Length: 186
Image 1: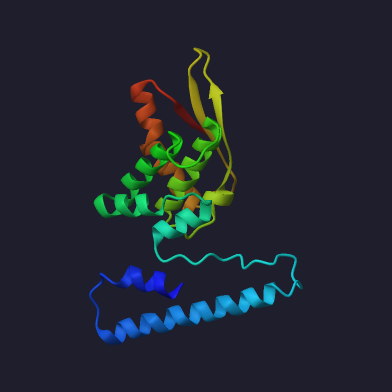
Image 2: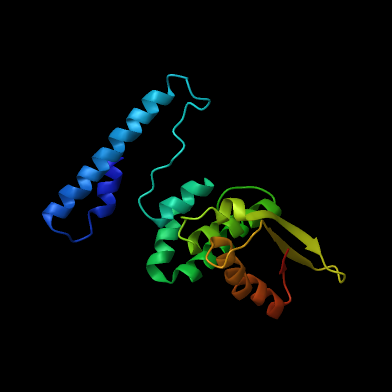
């Protein structure tokens, strides 16, 4: 854990005392994590694993939150473009099946949740609990659209609200113009 954290900091210019401070924080986190793991392995709790996953940046958080190996690609996208555009691009790649397997509905569900996690910086529960369902539905003309059902209430300061704006400015709006998969908010 310490080596991974220090590797991420290697290319960042900082005074030596900052580097020592970061090392001390990483060492403390590793120590606490090891103690928690040792306690869990005693079998007293229902779970024998430590639930929190250690992440060093947004890309790590999003990848670990959804158990999809996208950290390196997302890190690359975020270094080249805005967070919102990176979210749309990684969602497109997930939907196309470039990360993992699964049917189209599963890939679209993952794409929506991952892109929301990127937009909300992986610090809200909106990608996990704010979206109750993602389904593919049929229009009267036989074309298909994506239906995203949100769990309420949706607060204006919350992550789910951010997703509604994000989705409306992204694939849904593009789908309307291109006559492709469209979306609705339930």
